Amino acid sequence: MKVFSFGAEHGRHTQSYGSNFLMSRMAHTEGIYIGCMRLGQDGLVGYHLASTYQLFAVVEGEGWVRGAGLERVPIRAGQATLWEPGEGHQAETDTGMVAIVVESDTLGGNPEAIGPVPRQL
Image 1 (cartoon, rainbow, N blue to C red):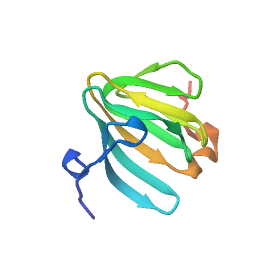
Image 2 (image 1 turned 120 degrees about the vertical axis):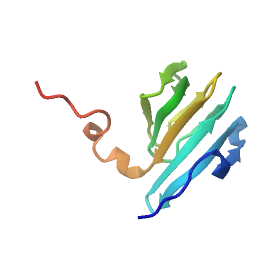
Image 3 (image 1 turned 60 degrees about the vertical axis):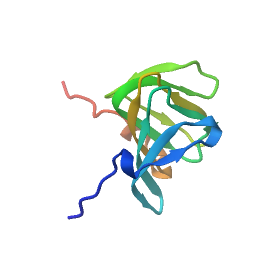
């Protein structure tokens, strides 16, 4: 077992594309990156193109996300969005937001595997 911290004190401040957030690495191996993104008050992930499939799962707070050509869509804790390679995207918050970010080409392998497990009736 390996116990490690990914709190804000381990985050790197990012300002690329006009961004303002902290990113703490959780795992980074060939083919997959997993991190914890912390956007403070008025936090922003500036508009840029996704280099691979990117899952953005909000675990705390609320804000907005958008994809290429789309208006801002509200997002809050317990919700996630998936951006595809080459898709322009952005995330922002007025009050603060924490998200787990997963980046990997394997997320595009089976579109039915993304999202909740369908409930059996």
